[in-house]
Amino acid sequence: MEHGGAPISPSARMRARQQRLDSLKKNRPPFPWFGLDIGGTLVKLVYFEPKDITAEEEQEEVENLKSIRKYLTSNVAYGSTGIRDVHHELKDLTLCGRKGNLHFIRFPTYDMPTFLLMARDKHFSSLHTSLCATGGGAYKFEEDFLTVSDLQLHKLDELDCLIKGVLYIDSVGFNGQPQCYYLENPRDPVMSQKIAYNLENPYPLLLVNIGSGVSILAVYSKDNYKRVTGTSLGGGTFFGLCCLLTGCSTFEEALEMASNGDSTKVDKLVRDIYGGDYERFGLPGYAVASSFGNMMSKEKRDAVNKEDLARATLITITNNIGSIARMCALNENINRVVFVGNFLRINTISMKLLAYALDYWSNGQLKALFLEHEGYFGAVGALLELLNT
Picture 1 (tube, rainbow, N blue to C red):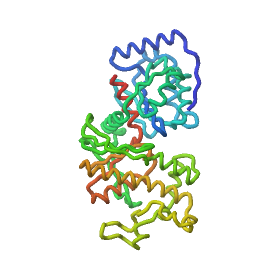
Picture 2 (picture 1 turned 60 degrees about the vertical axis):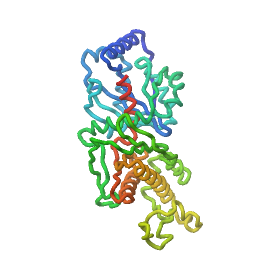
Picture 3 (picture 1 turned 45 degrees about the horizontal axis):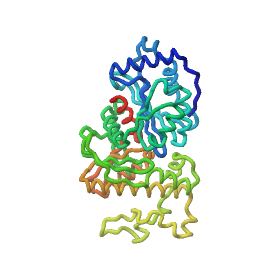
């Protein structure tokens, strides 16, 4: 993220204050509209860009509000780490009676100090007294927002925001296309394809949120849900172990390595133990019996490369998540499992593995579902909460 800005005049402050009051009279918050989800690895930010601004509004709009809008919508990268996921943009949404586009922006949590300086230098506090934020970082960085940027955080529960965001984004779709899909023939490189899935009547569903760690929720209605369980072995584990084992420095690099590796050189398979399938219990020979089990042998350690290790790490983490999700679905008697979270961003290997595993081990009773907007639902839920207050 980058920052910079000019001092703000008293008359501009007065105009901004008047605009805030006018917005509140119309039962909606003043612009700009943001939702923030501050996770352990990534910060996700959604920004609503109004496209129905009248000539009168344009004239009255204070300079720093214009500059924020221009900065966020005319860039696809912010400094060295901020990214706007242009392919995720939702067009022609109506929110609170205003028509506009919804933008999706992310940057690493370690770069939060740069974001706070940018917010200060672009005078966010003259337009907003508080920001709706969720995720653990809403608590961790609360004081920094106040002292550096003069912004108060309105802290929201991350699981409430996640569910609100999922249900809302699924209801509006994806620019005329469905939001939800499943993978048909996930193990077949030629026949595998995305198939749209209608989540119109979604309950009950199991929601598996894969971020740095994993939370699994059983959702019975928009207001009735429980956190069934979770695991500390999530996307942060995959990336952290890959950094240790391969020396990679980005999530994208770790996934690129994994896509070129062969995990069967690292893992001990059922066929390595039985010489084939373990037929009595329906275990195919290619199933993993022991993740990293071959690494006990020096000879086999010498035969693997970094790509193989990255692939085995990805398979290990994904298999564990799939196994826990399947057991939770059985215990809760739920047959639709929705996987979300930034771990799944550009990660077709894990999606195919989850789809296949759930279908295979449940004899077709369980369906793995995915959503196009992966890890942005908490931020969307925070934005919706801003519009409700």
